[in-house]
Image (tube, rainbow, N blue to C red; front, side, top):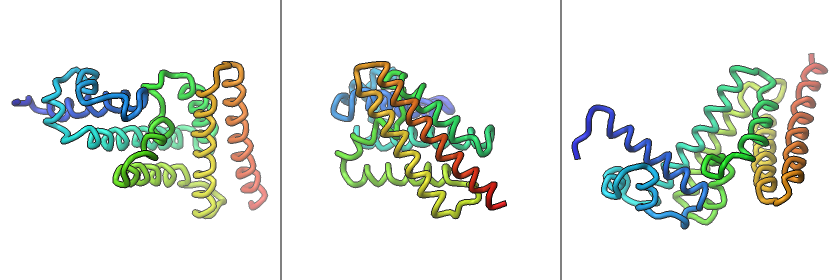
Length: 201
């Protein structure tokens, strides 16, 4: 197949995004190459023109989805400064809790699938997750780098776990209560850091 300038990259991106939606919603075993190709609006042959296997597309979907999280964090840091964590928690515990699974956060929805995957896939996820945590811990004063990193790990784990629990319950009121509790806890943690910085000054 001959591509126009830029078309090959656009097609690949469309396949990656389609794969991410499919894996988030149905899990790795819940979709095949034909289903991903159909979601992307391409033929199965076109899929294999970009990826050798479904597993390779899974790795690309992980990289893309986790990259979206890191980009959002960096955007919120620029827009809200020290208050970015609260903004992220509000977005995460509301929009990423109630959206369709196909549009859910890769960090949360793909983690169970990654945990059942081969080591190479877990390595891809780990590399992307480390970059997210590095971004989340950047520029946090007066904490040391190690302390800021530990707090980022703890906060992200709390948010991911909170969304997982809130999505799993049937009662919407309970789901909202879980979300509010997690969002409040993140706010308390950030206030404690801010207060300690004021004291240090």
